[in-house]
Image (tube, rainbow, N blue to C red; front, side, top):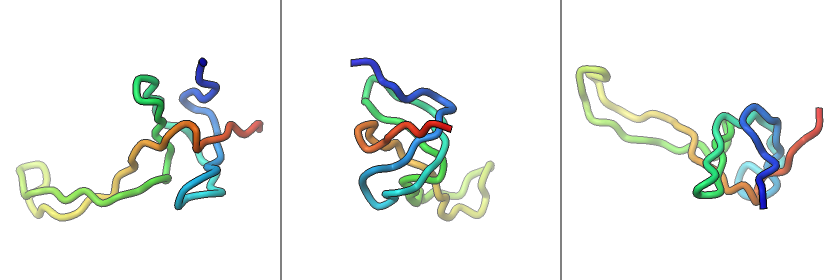
Length: 75
């Protein structure tokens, strides 16, 4: 079955911690059946000090959400 969710679409999260959130799709991963949605499913990534980030610390990043938990919203 073809995915009805594409990059740039607006979707509503229908399950999970961010249920009810409406946001834009940043990237679709058809191989895994997931999509990256702006501001949804945020988690912390711990990074070691490096030249790019000399202090190290924690970065908050978005993780992919299963497409079955997303519903396209018509604008």
